[in-house]
Length: 348
Image 1 (tube, rainbow, N blue to C red):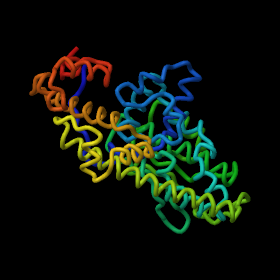
Image 2 (image 1 turned 180 degrees about the vertical axis):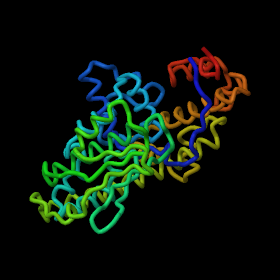
Image 3 (image 1 turned 90 degrees about the vertical axis):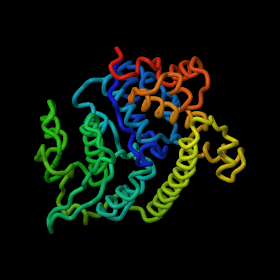
Image 4 (image 1 turned 90 degrees about the horizontal axis):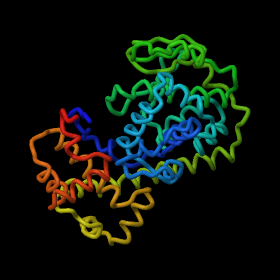
């Protein structure tokens, strides 16, 4: 098995487990319908099949992107991103979908969607840009440079957003054009059939352009009380994600510094001036388990050192807290499904 040398992004958003599993659940549903095993996608990530469908579970961008890459290899259809996006409805967006449906105007709904995109498991950052008096654009920006999944992420986001917009304002909704930074894929004709508008590939940004007139459209599903209640829940969920992100990031920071020492949960809790019980409870609220976080960081560090190729297997094991090389080999096989030697550059 071969692996290329890789750099783990230093941005804490890459490993912070704050992303709901919404998109991953849709991937798993499609896989189940096609009798494709999902479990291999989760190997070495500390996530179970049942957790993919658990609304309380949060994953990191690293975990989500790796699952998507494995899914794309297991279901190698070039249009898979469009399929995943089109598979979604207003119900997929949960409480945020309800808040948008009950907003006063489509413009208010769009602003709610942008403000609270994180609670739906969005993997791209979005913003609304005013182009001129007649047009506005929903701009999507990748959080990390990863060409392997860029097409999938754009297709999923724009197709699901298009479905949501039509469910809010009706089947008459139609964008002016869709602009994408990548070259036309093999299924480029599917874009025009789905979005029913001009599609430009090789553009400077990824964005969908709509007429400004849509923003002023009053929604027939507007309900002031339901809108207030749904929006309040959205805000609480967003605040909860922020709190959960902070505790997980704090634990990860300590573990990265002390991987070679093999710190216990109690030792990390002491570093944070918390009791072991309190830290365990806070991690559980974030959908995380200390051992899984520890194993995830040890896996990442071991892979990084294996890619560098300078240290022996025993030394790498020592760097991640194993004094016995055999014990490290067994643990690494459990984490990744492969032996450490198989992950060396040029191994085959």
